[in-house]
Image (cartoon, rainbow, N blue to C red; front, side, top):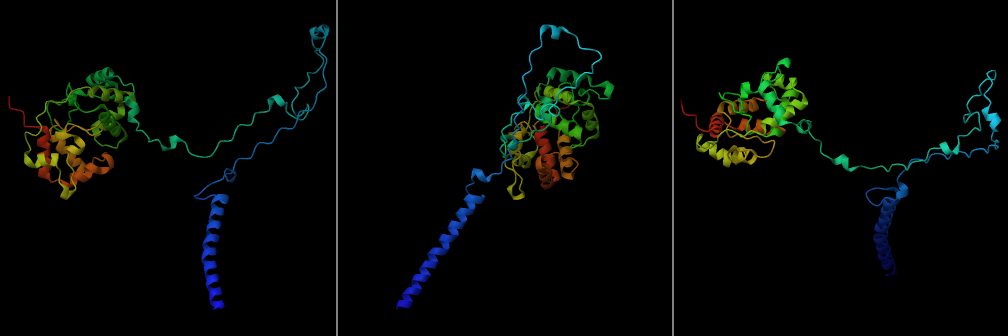
Length: 319
């Protein structure tokens, strides 16, 4: 019976002692050597302090020269004495010239390390003059081979002949500046616009974008054509094909949503179709994380045509 009790006591002691030892060792490691727990200030390595300069040797007092001595010019036959330096004077730098030891920087991160980067085109718009952009749009830069913007995009930013030239009126300055910057860098490829954008300075891109951003868009007749299929894609999308409603990004009936999500309402059906096909075949690749490339591949040709007609509105009556 005694041996049995002794065995039980040993077992209980081991059950208590082992976790206690483990806990003590863990706390010692966390507090003494760092880790995920507490960190003592003494455990953080600090840069060594600079050595203290040696005390300057006492210099014998030199009596001030008399007026007669100070007025006497130095002899031309006597070689000029070299200037005293710490090496040839007392062997130590004067105490007054000893730099003050600065407080060592504490290692760590600053708030700027977590700041989001900003695109370059935002700087193009800073302080941009819309009036200067209007003059540039009307006259171009003949010396650089850039024709006037109005030749393709119309005098009020509305393309008179339709076709594959977009209406610029009604688009935001931010969206236009980004597209011109993409044309300039080659992120968006269209030979004519690549040439134009590369001939413009950053300031001129900002001015043109600021000007067109002030213009009202074309008259709206959205939803009067295109049929029920286009209306459903605009308002509801198609969950079975992972197609969100177009209005989620481009606003209800294509009126635009945010500075970088362009207005579709009023664009010609030819331009809309051309851009959707460019997204589908990958020739246009400047969409955010490839969303338009993915959506365009899930739409049928007939749906793209219906959406193009839906946003463009009914054909203009023949004159």
